[in-house]
Length: 588
Image (cartoon, rainbow, N blue to C red; front, side):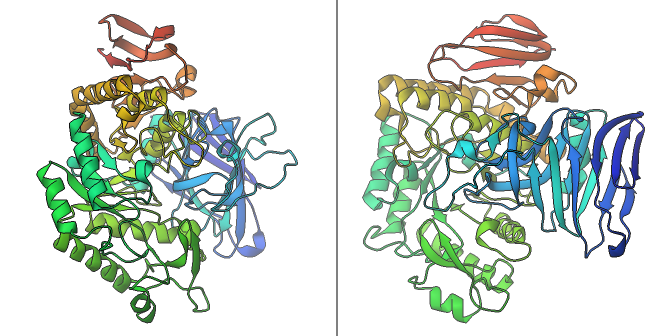
């Protein structure tokens, strides 16, 4: 058994394993504020600053090897020390100004075998490898975001090599294991994990959503025609998701009678075609909503500290937030959603938003935690896109709205790095955003992007489409269906990995170093992933490629030709023509 030891002398902190330092840092010491508590726990120590002290502790990134965190980022770089994240409130964000996105976990694991896990029930601020260059502040708002590849910046050599954590009464754990995998497992008893899997209809077949293709230009006949189009192209489907804008006013949960004159008949028709049906909802209530006066008069809307309503500017105007800390408000929200299900036959909902950036207050992440906990407890046939301390929820957690681009800057490459980040954040049931992205603004997908995206997504836990592959030509349609055929062949493996996640907490999608945690080449591999322990997936995520380098970790691996290859090894030029997803199965 490894010997773990912690020394704090003055402000210097050293965390040892078997006599070697695996984590080095410094702690804020303010003797006037009270004693710093260092409490031993199984697998490590809990560090607790005095409740009234605004502390900021820092850790040396470079001494501990590579860093892997649970942060969903707009520019999803992997490993974490490649990014330069400016100092920021550590909150769940929609298009956050420094690069934080919708699902966050204050959890960092190092390749040296150390882990830092801050408590979720506190307000935090953080920076990671912050740039020392004198850069202008990023311009940002909901309508005019800074370029995604600027948030966070790729380290250009000016990063300070530090993780800094701060907050009033700062509390965190230092945990360790023989390696990064054991250190991550040491965090599990603190973050929890789901004990059941999401409903199978949500992930065994693709979700089809109206959003990327139609945006808000939807109506009853269009939804039915879209379903018939999907069927006519002989592709797989499970759920039809009716996105924005099916209601008249944001905050109301009744179908627009002009756009949807008979929603019950529509849902019945979709059911008859073999679809389950969901609708998009969010916790915003705009002032023109029919329910607004009721929500305001009953105290169901989020208030500021002095008691006035908290105004919110979101992507569809100005409104207010449902108060997720008010049990009566949540009951009212849930009752209205259940009534809509009863009257129309809807199977469930796509729950959007819920990020702390809209909520404000002294602990805004509490909004996210309460909102998602409510959803998970009441509407299991669902998806959400925000998360803070919700690792136990047995529901699909969606990556943020993807761009129709190729890179880690919210494009195809971020599908893989984002799945790895969410897995280490403790969220095993990942729903990537729509194949091919959202086609926002001047961005548009093409056949190659659609095909490679379908392949990269094929062996992730769930998959959803909106942009129809057949719009990009016959070959695109055929090869996207072929990617779904690959998924069908591995569904039992996906199901087994999901069941394992409910039993041991192991992620469904794992970094390549999971099998070789001491392997430097595996530690920096950012374009491959493991499904469970026995399936390695190496998708093409660069345009114009018909071959790619593949790294196989320790073990014996069988590729598509049937040849068994001993790892660790690099395949410098593995053939990957447009019709091929490279998958390797471990045979020993």
